[in-house]
Image (cartoon, rainbow, N blue to C red; front, top):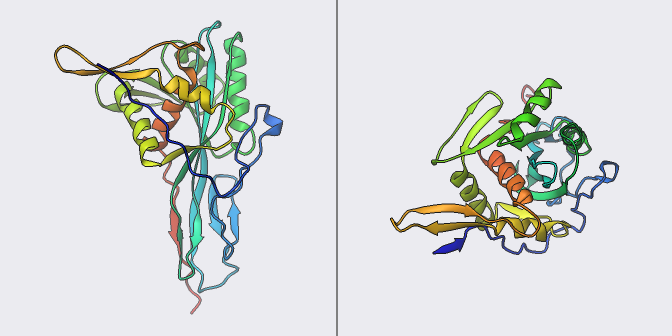
Length: 273
């Protein structure tokens, strides 16, 4: 028996209209905030911290949230597609009227792109430019599928001192890190993405141009029950290739869940009395 395991629910209408990142780095622009903080003045720092300015008011606590990006990439041979997908990940200070606190964590797929017929050098250049493009620059993590040619691209990124993580999909149900390389269970990664979508913890920007292509790629992953009663995950090729945008999203989603930087801090002003 074969069952699809990755389905993406329709998202509710968002609070804002502008949420799509378009191809061409000079045209990438910041999405508007999901929560209106009419009582807070938020400062977006270059390192991804988001702080409410207190104006030296001792009664107003300073709360630090974050806004960062997970750039996931699947790399194909010269005649296959390579893809990049970006997840915007934020947790902003909000005011309830009674207190200032961190709002809910929001993860949104805001950018997707695919291309083929380019050299490894061009792929590396593309990934560097994408990671450094506004608004990603300085607050993004680059994660690539380190399987097959991903290892070659990872070595080229390392030669250029580009910080990144190369994820190699394995069997089993666990994951472990060794330097810039991570060996992670393919089943764990795919199930993680399925749970993120099912729980509403991950959504698509409502006008993301490549949403249907990503959903088509994700639909190629299925569970199959063997004669012995075991469940295995299989993937079929679709009309556009080997599910490259789906794999890029699986890698980015896994990174956002399992190794986010610890940058959330809450502090209060002191010494005023």
